[in-house]
Length: 371
Image (cartoon, rainbow, N blue to C red):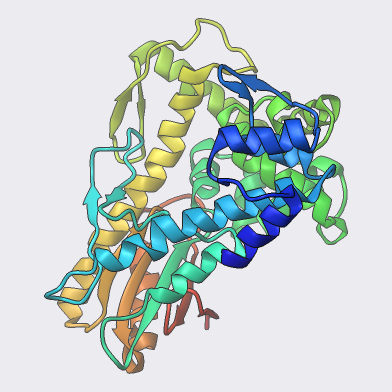
């Protein structure tokens, strides 16, 4: 950070408080004469979207973005987490809340260990600090593969989607092949990227505008892709309509384990451009059922560990993932136990698949192949 601050001051032509929006506005728009992108009540905005638009015009905005990211990592994790280590146990302890998230997901607080960075190279380094509590132990991470899409395939009964999961193919590549009318081995990275965005977005009501913005394509292209998706996966389209019909009738959305969430504001007539209550209803069923599933899995794993007298310990739940610590010589047996319990937690019409990885810290974990 020190070197980055020096570089920022050099690019700006003088020293200033990088964390001050007022001083940054002066540098960017008055001294460097960069074009104002949007305004707030206090003046030209310097938010992330503005910095991204200004980045091609001058190197300073990109460095400011980098400084913000590193500062957040330092303040949120590097400075804060060591102070929260328990003096008696020498460990970091979080608390899980069962009723904070409306979908039924667990949330974590004091500290939140469900938001440890994973998307950026610098952020992932924070995970290196998370290690087992004793020598001779390793961490095991067990993650449901594409669990929400599997829940969707189960509920919808869509034959094409279910077949893809039964055949063990890459679901994003399979969707791309269906929509673009090519063989799976002809799907390129751009096709797969679009299919992935549709898989995770359109089923929750993402509009052509939203899809176009996320993929950097035109709204016409996005609309064509969405139409192609639902025409080939008509079982999904029919199911989503049924969810909303049931919600109109009953006033609630219901998960796979019967947990109900009241939903108000579902419109009387179907509309492809879904409003917030309609998106909430669908999300409550799919994401809520995935939450039910992993809680059921946690119960099964915990019971099996106790019944077997296994030395492995469940440490964390991060939505679709469970983290354990285990003596290294018992890793293989724990992997077998965890996969058995997680993959049989609930009976779906498609197989549940759990990906496992282990290592001496949370960053440097290596995939454990299936037998």
